[in-house]
Image (cartoon, helix red, strand yellow):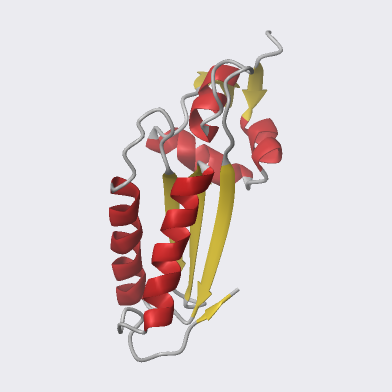
Length: 149
């Protein structure tokens, strides 16, 4: 087998994710993989496509990953924040450097996590938008208190 193929476990280690998250990406179609027996194999090109790494190592540019964790967020507020974040992503117009965002709400802990991957400027713009909404107190999070972790 080629050295350019990875298992789901190896991809999880490389990206600092839980292996269940990687398998979820595969099942949802976000990460292409081949199934060989009972295991998934991910080609380097498909891993690069997921992470937004340029196809050639000499391509200029930088990418940043950000994790925003918000406490005290109920389901309705999480839905509103998710919509806001996606609207912010859709205003980014560089198709060669897409901004990728995933939101997760933990109902039990009233916690929302937003993971952002993309170029420096677009990520900074999205973080400023999120900060402005959270600090502006527009009622987005409802009457409860919230904290950023």
